[in-house]
Amino acid sequence: MFSILLREFIADLKTQRTRAFLTFFAVTWGTLAVVLLLAFGEGLKRTVRDGLLGAGERIFMVYGGETSKAFAGLGQGRRIRLVEEDLDLVRSAIPDVDRGSVSYGRWGTSFQRGKTRTNAFLEGVGFEHETIRHMEPAQGGRFINPTDVAQKRRVLFLGTELAERIFGKGVDPVAKSVVVDGLPFTVVGVLKKKFQDSSNNGPDAARGVIPYSTFRTIYGNRFVNHLIVQPRDASRGPIVKAELYRVLGRKYSFDPSDERALGMWDFIESEKETHAVGLGIQIFMGLVGAFTLLIAGVGVANIMYVVSASSARSAPGGGTSWRNSCSRPWRSLCREGWWDSPSRPSSCWAWMRSRRKTTRPCNTSCARDCPGPSPSSAWASSSAWVSWRGSSRRGAPRRWIRWNHCATNKERRRMSRAALAVLFAASSLAAQQRPIAPKDVEVFNRSVSSLSDGTKQGLRLSEHAGDGVAYLRGVEFGNGTIEFDVRGKDVQGQSFVGIAFHGVDSTTYDAIYFRPFNFRTPDPARHSHAVQYISHPTYTWQRLRTERPGVFEQPVSPAPDPNQWFHVRVVVASPKVSVFVGDAKQPSLVVDQLSDRTKGRVGWWVGNTSDGDFANLKITPN
Image (cartoon, rainbow, N blue to C red; front, side):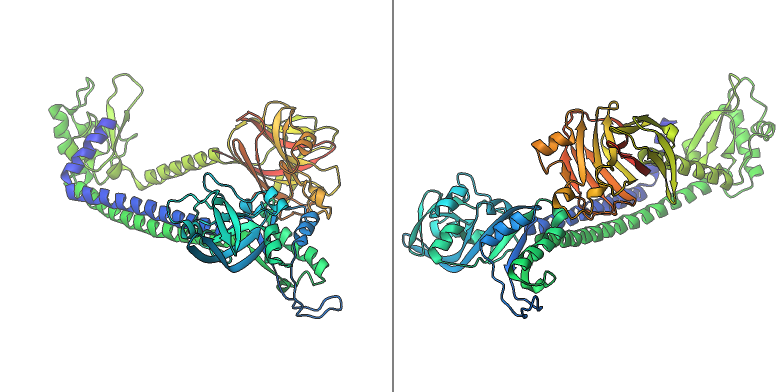
């Protein structure tokens, strides 16, 4: 069968050289256009994002401002100026703050080396400035360290552009001396080259950096230029931002809703906007490429139609009645030895009449049903031929169906429905989503019952002492996505609901679970314990919280109603596990698996003394 199709394909190529070339060119060009435009859009999106991240990642730059609202008996128009102690206050009052640095600044600072002299921006910062502002040193150097700050050392970190202006190209400035505003400083490092298209007070490559304690001692500044604060998690950004206004508003007596009291450069929001712009560009490029490929497809369809129409006209009986086309040409071919079966009837027409109960000839070609070997290439041009046994008895002749010209509209519709059914079945295998009945799960340390709550069709696991799990029968999960709806309750210490995966038995599994009673609690410590990863039996939540606090449990943002259904999406790409809640674009929790298992059983999980409702399970393996 395959060899016949191949011969017919080669014959068509030889007959329709120009059309074949145009067909291949159109498809190739359309595909290439889609790939190139999508790649260009992705590259542009990444470039814009990297340009923003060159100035810092996941940070807030906080500047003093001017009040625009009266508050606590104080009028508007008051100047708010920040000091070093404000960073310590923010760190102690906001647990979600991970790193921070103060920043002093001074334009027109003189940098001199021998007879070479230039002016540039000088900045005084802390040692964590390196990480939060991506100020990585080039090989052989270092950034400001805690000892430099504590001892107020006169050490200098140079941007690449400023280093070339002072020392020239090809010279290593590390360990050399530079006079800064008349005082000697030792160069300890040079900025590693980076791409940066956003900045404050000019690009990092054109500035010098010294310890903030040294800067304050030399120049006597009382107020800082700004504070730099980095949250532990980007998803907590809005909460940290609101807390900054609340904490500093309490100290400086301004309304926390007065946004003009503090200037705020929100890098998290800027990154989201940049991502949205980049995604829009990529979608536009993809649409342009898709339309290009669509136009190519229309051209291919037209060419195929011309070839098919031409072949239909050139086939025996083309344009004539079925009786005329089959009563003479096919009978002649049969007599010439096309069918050499011992039970051959006297003519093709007689054989067709004898088989008319099981075979109905078509009206456009006599090639519907006739015994013998495969038709010649002249007859089969641009058509698909399929053969099968006419009966189960041994030696029965083969029958040939010509797809393009013999299939009736009813047959085509039936085959199309079958193809759609196959596609639907394949899609169902890739993403398994159906109501789960109690008989579909194997339950440990719980009882299970069916649940119907509006659009939610699922299961309810009962309350009991100890952990419980309900594994799906016959399902093994490795990497992929698990989505489900879950409902707990706002009762402290009595609601732990989630999903277990890569399971072996009732005590060996990895799991992601939630503590709904911590979703909206005002207690910051409890709030940060809303979603948890565990790997039983070795890594329990108690051990993880003691040995690695804040790594395997995080708050959920935005926080759902603890008494209502919420949607969960767990993405497993071993060893990385990411947890998304609701429609959040940023994960609430990202961890590396602690077990070495890469596949296993999957099912619902509830904790000690907890029950739970589960519905709308969808598993999409990779």
